[in-house]
Image (cartoon, rainbow over the protein chains, first blue to last red):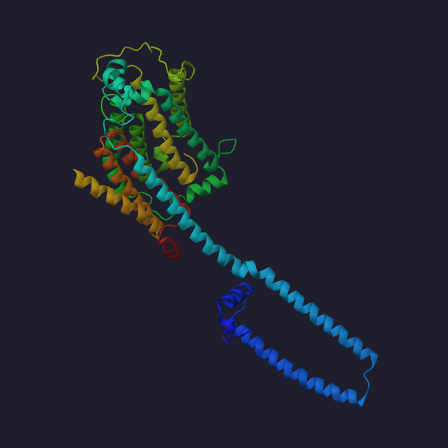
Length: 348
Length: 87
């Protein structure tokens, strides 16, 4: 067998060294040590040979030597064990990290390719032979206005034909708000006083911010009424023009957040406190459930609400759509504001 | 109109990549906000103004504010350490 001179530099040896956790330098040092040891041993054995020549070794010293050899062996074994114990810490994590990065890139590439391939199978956007261009659309287009009384076909769809969908949606939103409350809300004590945690979180709330920023307050004074009025307009006009409960509620919520940023929680608490929040989000939900909950039993077949449809295009028309829009708007606005206060300091 | 939509869509792709690549979390949120604004204009072009309003109010408004508060709570806003050191 041919032994290569640069055997230590081959790929296999490098891998083995990496796995064992030693560097080339260490090996060279070790080789140097071995050479020195060998020389010492040679010397020793020479001396011993001389000594043996002079006197026969006594049994005890032989015993002694055997014990020393055993000890050295045990030490070597424990050092080996230590090295293999430390291997995951020194090299395992590195290998795992590289593998992790590689696999994440591969996974992302696979997902992107799959999604792009799926998109290529989709029918052309807005083409007349698309599967979604069926009798449902014809029905909505032809009879939607007469059946729902809403000029905005989208509002007619989501709050009349498929009102139970929107019922579920607003409940999802409410459940999300309740979950955030469970996670983040800080409670008052039983006798109505704030606990220490609540008080300190209120104190730390805007430690590094200006308290009564004049610029922000002036901007809020001008903007907040406009924003909230626009939100109310979007909600009330939901059955006539684009918009509706969800968008209007989000706009009102954003306006309330701006108000509380500018003027602080004390002033905002006069309009929105815990009691008002509970009433303003639960009562609309109950009303909605009472008005449209039956859909789950009748299978989306409609019962007449008894509210007159009115003239399409007037603000008081479209039967139940307007009250349901107001309900959804209230729930959404309260939820948005509640999210903000919970994130900020754990409650209103 | 086609040119505008292509431009907006390419902005969208750039924003989506930039959100993932930017090192500073605050920058990511601002880019995410602009992503929402572009998206709402695209909804407008696709003739769904309802979605455009909602996207602008929720995506660009409320979500970003919630992100800002979260960043503040986890002390990830840039320069906050300097402020604390001064006080």
